[in-house]
Image (tube, rainbow, N blue to C red):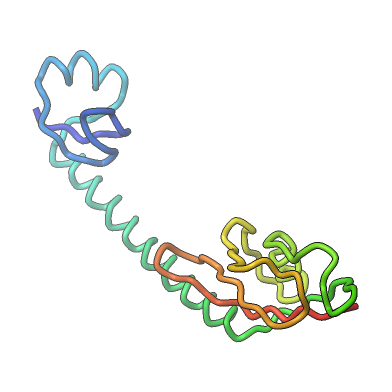
Length: 148
């Protein structure tokens, strides 16, 4: 019997996948637990519309990420920290601080987990932080670290 899975089923298939399963398995396990629906014409049309909507959303998210990349790469984030002798910082600049200052200065909200600082920032100067905006889009944010 052909069915459409409503959830991931271990060893059977992933959500929204159309599979061929034994009649008894479908009637006694998948249907009672609401893990699948019959793959009739109405349900197949519904699945196609759902997939088309998901694809349109994915394209929109990608375009938004590219626009955000252009906005972020045109900015230079100025961060002032307490420094000691020779321009060395007390502590270091973290991704949490970068996210907070980006929100305060530019009004752009980015999750701190998406910000990667390649090397530890322990001195004044210019650095670049990488921001993962989408699975296919990353932006480089210029950081200018100065002393107070």
